[in-house]
Each structure stands twice: as structure tokens, then as C-alpha cells.
Amino acid sequence: MNAIRTFWLVLMLAASPAWAFQSRVVTIPSAAMHRSFDATVVLPDQYARGDKTKRFPVVYVLHGSGGDYTDWTANSHIGKLADRYHVILVMPDGGHESWYIDSPVDPRSRYETYVGTEVVTYVDSHFRTIATKQARAITGLSMGGFGALRIALDRPDAFGAAGSISGAVDPRGIAAERGIERVFGDPLQYADFWNSEAIVASAEDFGREHIALTIDCGVDDSLVQSNRLLHERLIELGVPHDYAERPGGHTWKYWSNAVKYQVLFFAGAFRQAAREMRDGHAAA
Picture (tube, rainbow, N blue to C red):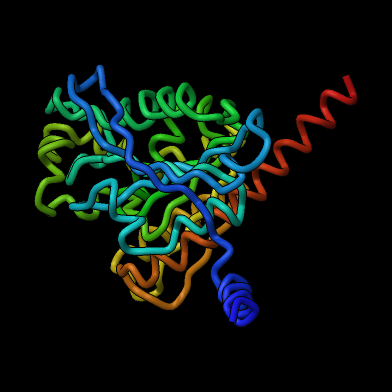
């Protein structure tokens, strides 16, 4: 009987998923907004079981409009990617309609400073990260796709790679949506701000700052045209980037599939940056 039980135990273990990532919720204070927000952090299995001095690159993944820090883990299998690519995943709370900007009209809404600076500082001080831009990436879906690209452009010393999934890359095209004017301001009165925040307006900076860039959007997504225009502008400027359109719309089915390709891209960017740093030190 013991032999039979042992046989079935071994069989079940062999058939079980190899993923052993650790997901936890942390509370991160914001001095800029005088409050604290929760964030989901996923650590790869190696973090606990391997060399306790080993440090890991970090991928920040932002939620979309109306979402929160639980969206990605609740609606996708993103946690598996931490083990697969040996990265730490951080999913901060960006508010329901913050657009991840420091609002020119609402001083209580400073989510770009929070996510781009305060969250990064907290994560680097509380986890074994490789605390360099070459080992940090940021991406997100929809509103979070815009936020990820905007934060990377405004903080090129913090992020060496950036991505967008179904990103609302040009807020000017959706100005009538509920909530967006509350943080961007009136489109006429704050026209200069609206124009400067559009990702296409700063597209050449991705190349100037050597930010590894990946963008994708579903062919049935209402935002695909603005993503195509950004892609075409990047080509005109000669800015290296990865661009993909796949079947699908503005849905979790699309996003949960797309994020796998984005984290794969980031893992490659981390390896490339590490090789370049090693080669540079060797040459020196």
C-alpha cells in the first residue's frame, strides 16, 4: 500500500505545474499624495530557494482605467512569468482614472511621481533588485499602457525598457471619456499639456534615451489606429522598437496573452544590457 501511495504521489508531482512563485501584497506610502496604496509583488521561486544574495530585474505592470493592483493577478496567469524569466513583477495601484500623470489641475493626483519614483524606491529598498535602469522595465494595458510609456519617457534614468498593451497612447483621441478631463484639465485651457503628453509628441526620445520599446494592440481594438500612428512615427524617426498586432480586442483574453510576449521581450532586453555592460567593463 505504501508503494502504491508513493507511486501516485510521484505521478501527481510530476503532473503538477512547476510554478512556485510567491505573490504578496505590500503597502507603499506616497509622500507626494500623503497616503498609502497597496501593490501586488510577485517573486520568482529562485528568490526564496536560491542564493540569498542574488538580485533580480524588475518589471512594473500597470492596470487600466477603473482597475487596481489586483487586476493582473485576478484576470491572468502573469505570476508564472516571474519564474519563467527570473524577474520580480510589481503591480502598483494607479487609481481608477489617474492616467498615471501628475495632474496640472488636481494636486492630490500625482501618480507619475508615485509609480515612477516612490514605488521604485520602495521596491529597491525592500527587495533584492538590480537597482539600475538596465534591469527595470515598465508596461501596462490601456490607460496603463499610456502611463508606462509616459513614465519611461519622463524618467529615462529609471527605466531601460518600456511597453504598452492596447495602450491609449494619445489621450487627445478619447478626451470625452469620463474622468480624463478631471486629471488632464479642460482640453482647450490646457491644450499645451494635452499635446505634450501624447506619446507621439516625444517618440524620438525613446531612441535618444536608448529605451528598449515594445508595443502591441489587437486588430479589433478601438485604439489600434493611434497605436499604428505611433508605430509609423517611430519608423519615420528610425527609433528601434518591437510592434505587433494580433487578433483580438480590448479584452483580458488579449491582454493575458500579450503580456507573455512583453515580459519575454524585457527578459531579452535585460540580458542584452547585461552583456553590453560586461563587454564595456572588459574593454575598459
